[in-house]
Length: 337
Image 1 (tube, one colour):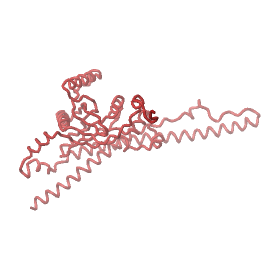
Image 2 (tube, one colour):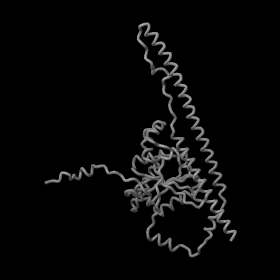
Image 3 (cartoon, helix red, strand yellow):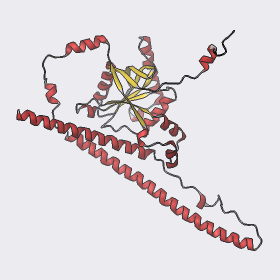
Image 4 (tube, one colour):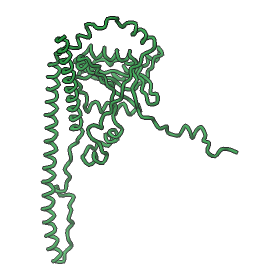
């Protein structure tokens, strides 16, 4: 007798597999070196490249990458860029290298990457790739002794809202979405083969302190702090302009509501006189009247991105200031000894 709970192969194949959430991005050390080399060579110009690898369960493996060519503004052609990507992936497939696209990487200047263009690129990738990430590398931040490398993805709730293109206050409250819920940072794990790990161990010097260790105690961070402050002031000006848009919207809304109340009172008085005369009352709402035309509410997406960028600049300034204090105390102890 057949088991009633058993399912056929077609039923199992038709069942949609529930994807596990992305927990970590595992990057090969060679891929990281390629990203750093490409971004530093063209700094301060911004560059991008393709990430290749495998999507395995809750881990997104990045095993290789290749850069995109820098095009002049007058030579920008999306078809040429797409053909270049296909040719590169075909060449990698012929030499038996992973050629599955899992995202892209891009350089940034002082962490100024949270833009509408980044969101649009994410949405374009999401049409063909279920889970993709963007690796952000900041050469200017890395010059301060920190590997400024982070993996980002858009949150699912934000992508659903972005598809509707409705960023009004009511919709944001309904989705319980705030400015911190746009991007999700995924932890990065660097992976190397056993042979490379053994080689790196063999390269380690026997000297306890090297010149590189002393270079880390440099206190010259004024240019970095000044540029962060300049960018922060610009973002504050942009946020002030966004707030002025909303103030103008609420003033227009309150003015329209007052006009609507005045019109309704006038119409009710007119209906009362018509009713006394035995005539049919007029409707209290007239869609053709411009008074009842809804005032469009400005989108809150730009203000959310600017707020995100301000928080990023503040965190960078806070981190550099904390490191400087630690260096000062350490240098004081060295001088005393």
